[in-house]
Picture (spheres, rainbow, N blue to C red):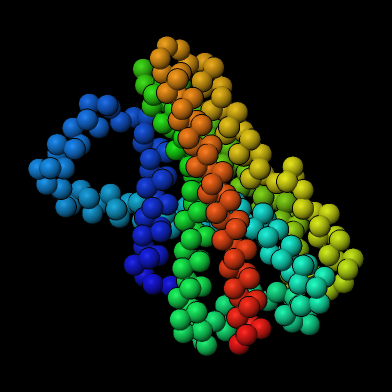
Length: 270
C-alpha cells in the first residue's frame, strides 16, 4: 500500500465524519464568504490542522466502518468460496479461498499485479466509507437546511444518529459472539457446512441493514416535521444521499467480488 494513497483515503473518511458533525452548525454567511477567502489565499496552518484532525478521525472511523460491515463483507467471501467448492475449484484442501495467503503470494510474486490489487483495495475502502457515512452526512445537511433555527432539535437528532451507529456496531459484535456468528471460509469443509453458512445469511438479521433502514426513516421524519420551503430542499438532499449510498454499497460489493476473482485467477495462472 502506498503511504500517500492510504493518507488520502483516511483523510477523506475523516472529512465525511467532520461534515456529518459540523454541517448543521455552519452559518450560511460563513459558507458564502469561503470562495472570497480562498481567493485571498489559504491559511496554511488552519488547513494543515483540519487535514490532521480529518486524518486522525479517518484512522478511527475507517476501522469502525470495516467492523460495522464485517459480517456482510464475510457473506461475499463465503458465497465466493461456496461457488468454488460447488465448481470443484477450491484453492486449498483446508480452505476453498485462503485470502490472506493469496494476498501474500501477490505481494511476493505479483510485481505489476500487486499494484492492481492495491488499487482494488483502495476502491473497496473508499466505497465502504461512503456507504457507511454518507447517510450521516445526508441527515446532517437536512438538519442544516430545515432546522438551523432549532439548535436543540439538531443536537437531539445528532445524538440519535450517533446512538444508532453505536448500537449497530455493538449488535454486530454481539452476534459474532453468539450462535449467529458468521463462519470463515476455512470452516467450509463439507456440504453441510456450506448449507449452514447460507442459512445464516439473512439480511434482516444484520444490524447494518437495520441501521440503514432507521436512518432512511429518520430522514423521512425530518421532512415530515419540517415546515416551509426547506422541506423541498430536505427531500432533494435525502434522495441524493440515498442514491449515493446505494451506488457506494454496490461499488463496495462488486469491487470486493472483483478483488476475490483476481486473487483466485492469480493463484491459478501463477
